[in-house]
Image (cartoon, rainbow, N blue to C red):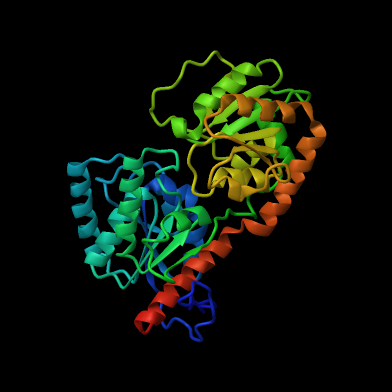
Length: 392
């Protein structure tokens, strides 16, 4: 059985609870899509399983279900869930989610993603699940958004937080934004992490991927990793690549989410999704993330662990990856000119690339272990159980 080594106090710190769980727990992680379960939460699901618990992944079904189940996790589909918002569809999804939760007899419901975070916290409390915990992976309104949007998003998150037992935040700025709505001592910043055993420099993979892409040893390869959507900065990446065409090769690795794309003059090669991501990161000479919104950039952490020099946008969720000029370069979001200037610096300065790549890897090894984040989640469940005297 799992020995809970940490316990959250009313001030949000942790201390030993002084006991061991008496039985395996039934833990469900709820996300909008199966991709989030497979790509973002795989390590956390694995840690739960290794602790001896019965783990369920709940999401809309898709092509990642097989990868989720390969971990040893039971997948329960909620077909009505989707990323887009619509009153009728969301009411239907909420009703379907309630039916699913009532049939699972859970001890813990851990919610993720914007919409399922809101719906799941409310549904979990309505279904009487003993422990409901939410992780904020990034507020879905940015500081520069309209007042109407910010009031709606922050208000909805504040209301939903009242239905959970504990709120976990990947970055301190999001916690600070919602501070007035959060219950005292019922939230903490946990950061984010990746599988450090998997993500590390891969010289053989680098050579193989560059050969597949036809990139010569004397060429600089600049790449982005992520879904092809506007908020990931595709427009700025394309503009930067066009401005620097001939000085480097440019590639975007990730699935097309079906959004309309700006015209591209051929400067960027879009290669779709790949699973050999350690090799892909290692193949890059410069990693770029021009995103407008992040909770705590996983791609940034993965690139850092692989020792890549990086250019990220100066937003919450990217600033946490490292300090500008020390671990990476930060540029304003939605600023193609600034992005172009920063990437050009790295193209022209191999010593800067080497220094930033080395310091980024050192920071990743010290700060980005997802097993630590998963252990904090387990400690949070134990803390809530103790506070409620659940007798686990």
